[in-house]
Figure 1 (spheres, helix red, strand yellow):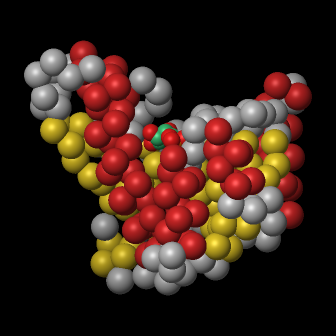
Figure 2 (spheres, rainbow, N blue to C red):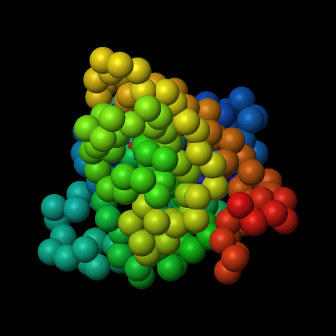
Length: 203
Ligand code: GRF
Protein backbone atom coordinates (compact mmCIF):
# COMPACT_ATOMS: atom_id res chain seq x y z
CA UNK A 1 0.00 0.00 0.00
CA UNK A 2 1.22 3.48 -0.86
CA UNK A 3 0.97 6.33 1.62
CA UNK A 4 1.29 10.07 1.14
CA UNK A 5 1.87 12.02 4.34
CA UNK A 6 0.95 15.70 4.72
CA UNK A 7 2.84 17.80 7.26
CA UNK A 8 3.40 21.39 8.36
CA UNK A 9 6.11 21.02 10.98
CA UNK A 10 8.48 18.85 12.92
CA UNK A 11 7.14 15.56 11.59
CA UNK A 12 7.68 13.28 14.57
CA UNK A 13 4.55 11.37 13.55
CA UNK A 14 5.88 11.17 10.00
CA UNK A 15 9.09 9.72 11.45
CA UNK A 16 7.17 7.12 13.43
CA UNK A 17 5.23 6.15 10.29
CA UNK A 18 8.33 5.96 8.09
CA UNK A 19 10.09 3.85 10.74
CA UNK A 20 7.08 1.53 11.03
CA UNK A 21 7.04 1.02 7.24
CA UNK A 22 10.79 0.49 7.19
CA UNK A 23 10.75 -2.23 9.86
CA UNK A 24 7.68 -3.97 8.42
CA UNK A 25 5.21 -3.05 11.18
CA UNK A 26 3.12 -1.24 8.55
CA UNK A 27 2.52 -3.19 5.33
CA UNK A 28 3.07 -0.11 3.21
CA UNK A 29 5.49 2.55 2.14
CA UNK A 30 5.56 6.32 2.27
CA UNK A 31 5.81 7.36 -1.40
CA UNK A 32 5.62 11.10 -0.88
CA UNK A 33 5.59 13.82 1.76
CA UNK A 34 3.89 17.15 1.14
CA UNK A 35 4.28 20.25 3.30
CA UNK A 36 2.47 23.57 3.07
CA UNK A 37 5.48 25.16 4.78
CA UNK A 38 8.99 25.28 3.31
CA UNK A 39 12.03 24.44 5.39
CA UNK A 40 10.34 22.42 8.13
CA UNK A 41 12.05 19.59 9.99
CA UNK A 42 9.62 17.02 8.62
CA UNK A 43 10.85 17.64 5.06
CA UNK A 44 14.40 17.03 6.24
CA UNK A 45 13.30 13.73 7.80
CA UNK A 46 11.71 12.62 4.51
CA UNK A 47 14.74 13.61 2.46
CA UNK A 48 17.01 11.74 4.84
CA UNK A 49 14.86 8.65 4.29
CA UNK A 50 15.08 9.11 0.50
CA UNK A 51 11.37 9.88 0.15
CA UNK A 52 10.23 12.38 -2.52
CA UNK A 53 8.90 15.65 -1.11
CA UNK A 54 6.78 18.50 -2.40
CA UNK A 55 6.23 21.95 -0.90
CA UNK A 56 2.94 23.63 -1.67
CA UNK A 57 2.79 26.99 0.16
CA UNK A 58 -0.79 28.03 0.85
CA UNK A 59 0.37 31.66 0.62
CA UNK A 60 0.70 31.21 -3.16
CA UNK A 61 -3.07 30.77 -3.53
CA UNK A 62 -5.96 33.23 -3.29
CA UNK A 63 -8.61 30.84 -2.07
CA UNK A 64 -8.86 27.65 -0.06
CA UNK A 65 -10.61 26.01 -3.03
CA UNK A 66 -7.73 26.85 -5.40
CA UNK A 67 -5.21 25.55 -2.89
CA UNK A 68 -7.05 22.31 -2.32
CA UNK A 69 -7.51 21.68 -6.05
CA UNK A 70 -3.74 21.91 -6.53
CA UNK A 71 -3.08 19.89 -3.37
CA UNK A 72 -5.38 17.15 -4.63
CA UNK A 73 -3.47 17.03 -7.93
CA UNK A 74 -0.11 16.83 -6.21
CA UNK A 75 -1.36 14.06 -3.88
CA UNK A 76 -2.86 12.13 -6.79
CA UNK A 77 0.38 12.43 -8.76
CA UNK A 78 1.89 10.04 -6.18
CA UNK A 79 -1.01 7.60 -6.79
CA UNK A 80 -1.38 6.76 -3.10
CA UNK A 81 -3.84 4.31 -1.58
CA UNK A 82 -4.09 6.42 1.58
CA UNK A 83 -3.43 9.99 2.64
CA UNK A 84 -2.15 10.58 6.16
CA UNK A 85 -2.45 14.01 7.80
CA UNK A 86 0.32 14.26 10.36
CA UNK A 87 0.34 17.75 11.82
CA UNK A 88 -0.96 19.30 8.60
CA UNK A 89 -2.25 22.62 9.90
CA UNK A 90 -4.76 23.48 7.17
CA UNK A 91 -8.53 23.32 7.11
CA UNK A 92 -9.58 21.26 4.09
CA UNK A 93 -12.57 22.01 1.84
CA UNK A 94 -15.37 19.46 1.31
CA UNK A 95 -14.26 18.88 -2.31
CA UNK A 96 -10.94 17.39 -1.25
CA UNK A 97 -12.23 15.51 1.81
CA UNK A 98 -14.90 13.91 -0.40
CA UNK A 99 -12.35 13.01 -3.07
CA UNK A 100 -10.34 11.10 -0.44
CA UNK A 101 -13.31 9.82 1.60
CA UNK A 102 -12.35 6.65 3.46
CA UNK A 103 -8.75 7.05 2.34
CA UNK A 104 -7.66 9.98 4.52
CA UNK A 105 -6.74 9.87 8.22
CA UNK A 106 -5.95 12.61 10.73
CA UNK A 107 -4.48 12.60 14.21
CA UNK A 108 -5.80 15.20 16.64
CA UNK A 109 -4.31 15.93 20.07
CA UNK A 110 -7.47 15.70 22.19
CA UNK A 111 -10.05 13.18 23.27
CA UNK A 112 -12.52 14.01 20.50
CA UNK A 113 -15.25 15.21 20.41
CA UNK A 114 -13.59 17.45 23.02
CA UNK A 115 -11.44 20.35 21.82
CA UNK A 116 -11.69 20.35 18.06
CA UNK A 117 -9.38 22.89 16.39
CA UNK A 118 -6.17 24.36 17.80
CA UNK A 119 -4.65 24.92 21.28
CA UNK A 120 -6.02 21.66 22.66
CA UNK A 121 -3.44 21.31 25.45
CA UNK A 122 -4.06 24.89 26.59
CA UNK A 123 -7.80 24.26 26.72
CA UNK A 124 -7.48 20.96 28.61
CA UNK A 125 -5.30 22.68 31.24
CA UNK A 126 -7.60 25.71 31.49
CA UNK A 127 -10.60 23.42 32.02
CA UNK A 128 -8.81 21.57 34.82
CA UNK A 129 -9.19 18.23 33.03
CA UNK A 130 -7.64 15.29 34.81
CA UNK A 131 -7.18 13.36 31.62
CA UNK A 132 -6.30 14.32 28.10
CA UNK A 133 -5.29 12.41 25.00
CA UNK A 134 -5.22 11.92 21.29
CA UNK A 135 -7.59 10.62 18.61
CA UNK A 136 -7.11 9.12 15.15
CA UNK A 137 -10.09 9.61 12.87
CA UNK A 138 -11.22 9.40 9.27
CA UNK A 139 -11.30 12.82 7.65
CA UNK A 140 -14.69 14.17 6.60
CA UNK A 141 -15.83 17.68 5.69
CA UNK A 142 -16.35 18.54 9.37
CA UNK A 143 -13.13 19.82 10.97
CA UNK A 144 -11.84 17.18 13.40
CA UNK A 145 -15.33 15.69 13.22
CA UNK A 146 -14.93 12.47 11.23
CA UNK A 147 -15.51 9.01 12.78
CA UNK A 148 -13.00 8.28 15.54
CA UNK A 149 -11.01 5.06 15.13
CA UNK A 150 -8.71 4.92 18.15
CA UNK A 151 -7.88 7.11 21.13
CA UNK A 152 -5.18 7.07 23.77
CA UNK A 153 -5.63 8.69 27.16
CA UNK A 154 -2.96 10.37 29.25
CA UNK A 155 -3.18 11.67 32.80
CA UNK A 156 -2.94 15.38 33.58
CA UNK A 157 -0.84 15.97 36.70
CA UNK A 158 -0.91 18.95 39.03
CA UNK A 159 1.53 21.58 37.81
CA UNK A 160 1.62 20.27 34.25
CA UNK A 161 2.42 22.79 31.55
CA UNK A 162 1.53 22.73 27.87
CA UNK A 163 4.93 21.24 27.03
CA UNK A 164 4.37 18.37 29.50
CA UNK A 165 1.05 17.49 27.88
CA UNK A 166 2.51 17.90 24.43
CA UNK A 167 5.26 15.42 25.22
CA UNK A 168 2.97 12.92 26.94
CA UNK A 169 0.47 13.04 24.07
CA UNK A 170 3.16 12.79 21.39
CA UNK A 171 4.45 9.58 22.92
CA UNK A 172 0.99 8.06 22.50
CA UNK A 173 0.59 9.48 18.98
CA UNK A 174 3.66 7.59 17.88
CA UNK A 175 2.10 4.35 19.12
CA UNK A 176 -1.47 4.67 17.90
CA UNK A 177 -0.99 6.28 14.48
CA UNK A 178 1.21 3.49 13.03
CA UNK A 179 -1.20 0.93 14.49
CA UNK A 180 -4.26 2.45 12.81
CA UNK A 181 -2.38 2.86 9.53
CA UNK A 182 -1.42 -0.79 9.75
CA UNK A 183 -5.11 -1.73 10.16
CA UNK A 184 -5.96 0.36 7.11
CA UNK A 185 -3.18 -1.13 4.98
CA UNK A 186 -4.21 -4.69 5.77
CA UNK A 187 -7.87 -4.04 4.94
CA UNK A 188 -9.10 -4.48 8.51
CA UNK A 189 -10.38 -0.93 8.72
CA UNK A 190 -12.77 1.00 6.51
CA UNK A 191 -15.21 3.85 6.45
CA UNK A 192 -18.81 2.90 5.72
CA UNK A 193 -22.09 4.79 5.95
CA UNK A 194 -22.35 3.46 9.51
CA UNK A 195 -18.98 5.01 10.40
CA UNK A 196 -15.55 3.51 11.00
CA UNK A 197 -15.58 -0.29 10.84
CA UNK A 198 -12.78 -2.53 12.17
CA UNK A 199 -12.96 -6.26 11.43
CA UNK A 200 -16.70 -5.93 10.69
CA UNK A 201 -17.39 -4.17 14.00
CA UNK A 202 -18.71 -0.61 13.92
CA UNK A 203 -16.48 1.41 16.23
C1 GRF B 1 0.58 16.40 16.70
O1 GRF B 1 0.35 16.75 18.02
C2 GRF B 1 -0.71 16.09 16.01
O2 GRF B 1 -1.65 15.48 16.83
C3 GRF B 1 -1.19 17.44 15.60
O3 GRF B 1 -0.02 18.11 15.21
C4 GRF B 1 1.10 17.57 15.90
C5 GRF B 1 2.12 17.17 14.89
O4 GRF B 1 3.35 16.81 15.47
N1 GRF B 1 -2.23 17.36 14.60
P1 GRF B 1 4.54 16.26 14.58
O5 GRF B 1 4.81 17.28 13.47
O6 GRF B 1 4.14 14.93 14.01
O7 GRF B 1 5.70 16.15 15.50
